[in-house]
Image (cartoon, rainbow over all chains, first blue to last red; front, side, top):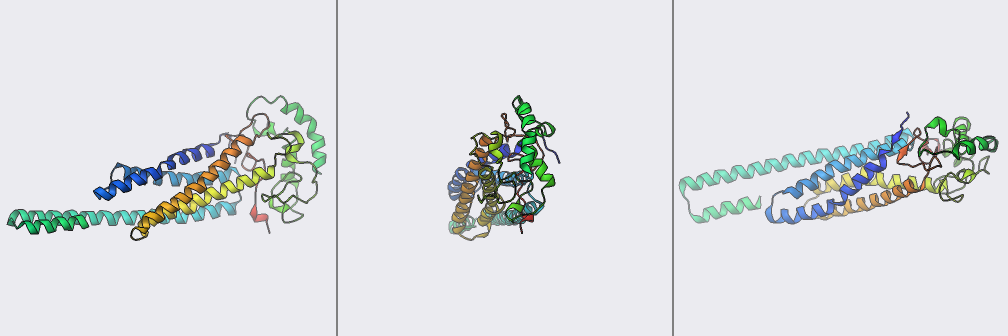
Length: 139
Length: 194
């Protein structure tokens, strides 16, 4: 196979390098905000998606590097296998974890609304109301 | 054998490459260059003989050693690649060995970071219970990023230092087929290593 023209390998590498530079900062901001609000903010999503885009891009760039260096099939296969298995596991873990999160969040919302309607209807005491709020905070 | 090729091709190379103006040359033109030709010839004709160390390479230049710097001991050990016509910036001492080992380390560091550490670090946040998740995630990703940073440094060094073809070539441009890129035919084939 003949590849001529611009070598994208160093360019992609530098883009990924620059993008991942912000990951620790975004992660720290996410953490401090999440601790207070218990909710994901823009920083959280930037941190998550920056990693989700840039790390696979880096994996592909590694394959590209092996290709233009003329690495043997064995090395390419080993790289692809390791990156594929761990990358695939990551995707699975992320999906399962997100689904679990959504379910938990939904459950919280359902519980909350149920309690609120109950409190509205029966006009229970203030102590009861406080317990419901405490529950929602902990979950 | 390689010596014969070099003396044979020295003249055409100087004729062609001294007037090389473009920053990159497509493969057929580049083949005129003496520093390239023995390599391509060797790549085609060199039998896999000699020591195991020599056999690691598909088409090594004469006197060419493995990444860890052990000098090759096979036949045709005299005509160095970089020293034959100064095709690399950095003079005769510029080692293809050095560049190749740097490239290998570059690849290993980046591959460990991207194929192993970054995915594992991403998963720790989800799988590790409690506050340990945060620290393990941060630590793993930081180690991965440091490894990647070292790889980027080596990569920048390679792009700056390796000039193929000699007249202002750059790794930012690919002008040759895989295996010849950059460190021209320093194809590292472990499959032959036995």
